[in-house]
Amino acid sequence: MDYKDYYETLGVSRSASADEIRAAYRKLALKYHPDRNPGNKQAEDKFKEMNEAYQVLSDPQKRARYDQLGSAYSNYQRSGGRPDGFDWGQWYTTGAGSAGGQQVNFDDLFGGAGGGGFSDFFSAIFGGMGGMSGADIRTRRAPTYEQPVSISLQEAYQGATRLFESGGRRIQVKIPAGAKTGTKVRLAGGAPDGSDLYLKVAVQDDPRFERDGADLYAPVHVDVFTAILGGEVEVPTMSGRVKLTIPAGTQPEQKIRIAGRGMPQLKNPQVKGDLFVQVKVRVPKNLGEEQKSLLQKARELEK
Image (cartoon, rainbow, N blue to C red; front, side, top):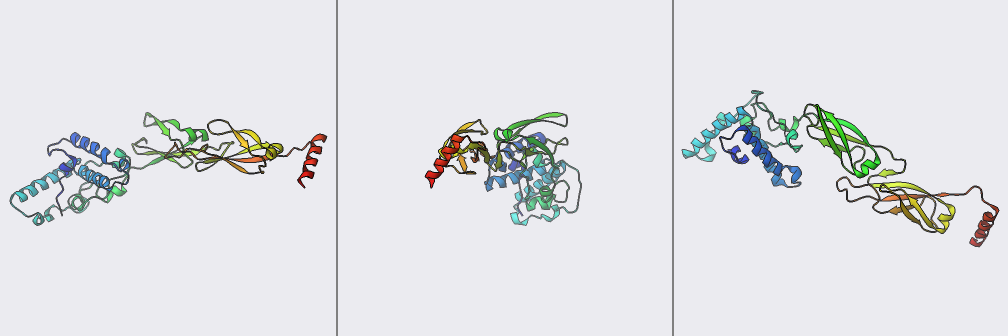
């Protein structure tokens, strides 16, 4: 088992104060947080190392034991001892130990991507000292709370904001464009007890449209003559009414696609789905004699 220099990991001196240790950790953790380095295994490993180092150095009890171990290990090295000959056995801890010391929830500090995967060194030396062990930190998280929030389809299209009261604070939350029913918006530390608050979005029905992912569907009513001869009609979109050309010979229930007039994609709001207009043909009930005559001639010509 290798000795780990936690002070070197955080880039602080051995005499660093608790505030200096915390500041160094926050600075590095923000840099290497997995959310800022998606798919970067090196950054993920670095983040885990910093979590481990901070778990020890931020806890006075663990730090004191670590400093004793570090002093003994340094003396052993100075005496010419081989790296694989150090007696680790006298430093192992077992049992529940003390539950005192600072317990840090990394989800609260940096929004998830916790610090699981502690090293054998940490588990052997500090696993029985209470607080969070390598296994604990993967399972012990602050409770999360959900708050339903209802928005209109128009708000889902353009984004929305909501104000919440939590723990005596007024918090403005942005709901991103492209949100759909079931979308969760995370508010770190937003619950009254400092835990995470998730806003669970419900998008209200809109009488104009049906939604399927990023695509929208809407009916448009045309008279039979427009369906036969073609023409222009106005149709609603999320950004205003537009003119749509109805080709001659359009069939009832035929769908006409209007590209880019659907909903924005949640993760890429500049890209929008499509609007599909379904043609509803109105057949007149009360025709005049002249209209009937003309339609009769048209039917005869069709034969």
